[in-house]
Image 1 (cartoon, protein in one colour):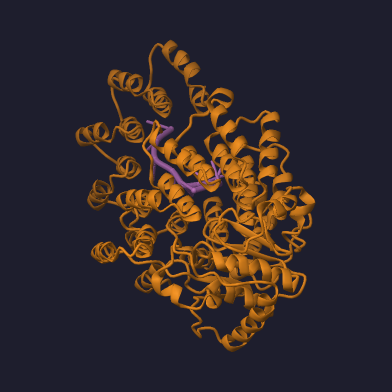
Image 2 (tube, chains in turn blue, green):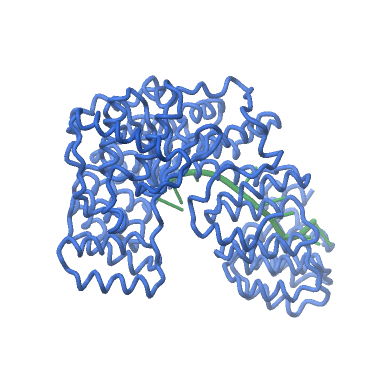
Length: 630
DNA sequence: ATAGGGTTAG
């Protein structure tokens, strides 16, 4: 009875019932302690604990766990020290206290001291190390384990996914299945997320087909990630279809689709869904507003954005947090209202973080405001000393003003802090393979000659259509030497050229890039779409660009500084956001009800190595060698 | 009766 109430979360009722019991046995008291702790009512729990005539391991462990999970690790430790007979569960509960509060060194010490190391504790250590950025150590624990369960696998897969080791996650997921461990929910969620990050529609679909067969696709958690996966792969239509299948949607699912419309530049549609959500009775949360405000930002809806931002607290009872200020800085900045943006930052009730300053910086880049750019970049250097972007930008900025001393100084700091830039690259899926291009016209691809010829030919027809290359973008986050290379050879252009050669007519060409698209490439691709009549979908580090008929769905909001962009007014009619118009984003037919054919062998089960080149994180290579699978 | 693992945005 007591246990039932607690399990159902009815702790108050349980408490009343408990108080009526004349002689309380160990089990009832322990139960009650657990229930109270889960609600954070530690002092009440402690009172019961102290009044118990005798206590066994389970009672002790429950109390320790309660402190550990409620940010009272040190109190937990005191109890742990005086406790007579500890078992594995006690040790694990204590360990979890340290890992969950980010005290990884103490966790590692305790782990080392454990007489036996149960699987649950090892799994906890994997998560602890991994979330703390120590992926190698997480892997080390994994390798040491003689006995693993499905949670062991999914923990490491999750770490790989979260820390940007997409390829390792894929490899581990497939190894897991070869070892006869069936995918569980957490691992499936991680792997779908990986497919989204890689924008690998083919792989994502294969996972989806697995889900359909196992009916996992009906799970509400899985579905939100599934929606996000399709959206990140550029297939908004299928994402929407998955969304529509659910008659009762939770807030996360609403958020997923709203953010999806925002990312694709369908601001009207995002707002529409937002209102639909509100009238359906679902209450928006903080994340909803990140989606909604960024939708306004991407589509230049300054007035709407400001109104929503103002009404967050009063109408929707959601607090404005740093993230929302970042959205507003972005929104104002994109619209060219840089002083307003700066004003907002100065008057924020919370401390501005790297995202806020980053938003201001990219707005400065767009609108060529060097003074504010310098302020923002300097702030970023303080907040994120190890990311290369701000250094390069600031250095380019100084260079443009011939401040060579400052340039040299900055380069020195960069070397001292061991900061290196991430090289720009683009990739495209064709013939069941991923083809990567690093730009600069390097002949790394077997069909290099053909691609160059294609680019030559394209160049001629582009010039006819009025294209003139613009190399004057100082405010770009690529390094000096990249500017020397002919603009013709940027990686995204090469990938697009390859797509024109390989992707059948009528199908969209989907290109991915790890950095933001270069401004010159953006206007070139618009024209390429026009002269070839092809649809090109480019996903860069920030967002999607749908190129069709000489226009881009981003309305050039990201790249306003390019000379030969058509004026915004010419594009206005284009982006009304009706579903019919979205349809052209994908000529693929997508899913038919609940069946899905798998194009090639099921790589997930067969465990072939996946066909991705190492393109996202140069660090992946070295790590892979060190901790080689199999 | 005591220890796990999950969703969205930036």
